[in-house]
Length: 444
Image (cartoon, helix red, strand yellow):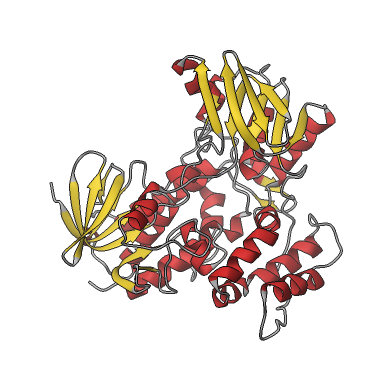
């Protein structure tokens, strides 16, 4: 088996697939590229969904895979997806599984008759080897990359609290403590009368709610969150104008300007979301001008608000939540998780304020996860933490920075993990832009 190649892409999700596609479109031979990831290329954590109830939270025209053809997915969806429930007054919101199928077909189409060199394994460690990169795989192989692109996407979530399972069998805890719910497999073994605890109040919780409603769940659902609020529903918005930003902004000035620019309308209204999306256009440039200390100030002051409103929900999921609320079947328990105790067949979650939630199954919807590969790069002193201490630092050309804050010439990072360095990175369009720009830089 070949154990080296010119370009290696680490990852198996959207970021890895779209990077591969744009390298191919720039004329890089397929034989010069190797993809390393444990799953189906193009699907990863977000789109390898066992549940048909998990939906995209953006409408079809915003899922851009080619800047020169922004409606490519929208046309493909009309031709290849039969999903009557996708249509809403705000646009079409398709299943995540179908978008993953679309991305996989893009890879196959770009390849044609050429061979995709991929390795179904997970990279556990990256080391410098002369001028190249040595990758240790979980199948005990080693692979050498002359140029390395890390595109691992969002790290799978892990429990944000202590977990005590001494009074429960391993088989029971494996099915009743759902640490990573992103593919929805847990739904296949769930009883419709179980009392469920959802740990977290974001889009992952809404995915679970939509799936539970669609399979006729009758038990109680408890949502543990610091605030009694879900992301607002997506409206039918369009950018109409461009804000006139002040030339010099502090974090305080930025917050003040945004507050003044946003209308007093409800956040679920088209008017409010039009203004919100107009503000987002230049936010990355502004973010990159702030120091690391200023970025941390922003994260602490408005990080939760930003996450709430940038990740808005599909109309289908909000409709499911409203259905449960009308039946008095769903309840918020305010607080943060401190400790989980399992005494089969019951799970007790103790919160930081002393409150408790009791159920028969718990689903981790916090989205909190740490990428061990990026952490390994820091511990190996090949990279440094970003401003938010959540990933590794990169420059504006996506090059990873070493301990002297100098950019490696053959090591890059794209995808959600670049947020601390570059700013807001959400949905396919932002990652597509990164892949297109990086493909222009690659030399072979």
